[in-house]
Image (cartoon, rainbow, N blue to C red):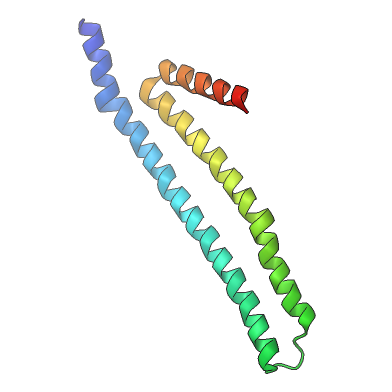
Length: 125
């Protein structure tokens, strides 16, 4: 019974706070990455709209419809290629962070739980 108490104390007051701190650090980094993704998306849209407005108003004679088309292609490329890549990388980092959290908080039991859930998800896909 004393061993169980020591084990429970170690998990609740040592391992769990450390794991939560590391998971929190990961969360802050993930939030920063997502803010960068959103800002890049908005920057691409504003750039494309700016090119269109400049062409319509005919302020700059050297800007062509090809430049406007390239701007919109950049936005479309970001939506269909860049965003899925960022989402995939974010998901991979989330899974790695959860694995570290489970292992730090619960040791071998956390690792076993991670493997069971991972294998169940792989079987369903």
